[in-house]
Image (cartoon, rainbow, N blue to C red):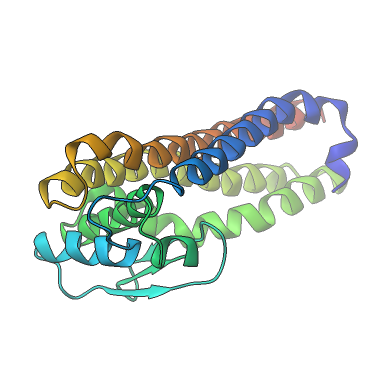
Length: 227
């Protein structure tokens, strides 16, 4: 989009882009490293997620494979936990960590975890904000309509709020996984740190997304004041 021609945009965007690149490389490196470390019990990611849910009393969640690299996610609308091939079929500590993290989201859903409910409720508005905020904002600048400019900022603010609300949701899911993996005998105490390493790295990607979104919002506010 033409806002990328504005030098001020890059002043706000570059720190977020750098942080996102570092976080992405870190999580890929951690996953590659611990994908080579097999668990003592030999459970696959799918089996680990099933065991964690079963031992926690959650029996109505489906677990199925999904295409893509680290495309793992929990869908609360269909109560389905979807695991990428590298997680679903693998018995590595990396796969178990990721699978148990996603199972942690299912436990949040079953326990009516407030932050997850808030994030889910923000999804439609955040999607609209991400897709149309910039269009409305710059259209407003072009036709000299502060109403459209402010509407664009408001819509993008919802998308920013989504990235912020995501942080406690992801942190809590990882915290649940780290405890349950050992308590339910999925990994040993000695293996917990390695199984958790990917989760710690992955959390940085959510931090990077939030920081990047906040910086972009600050750019929009700054740009609106320079009109």
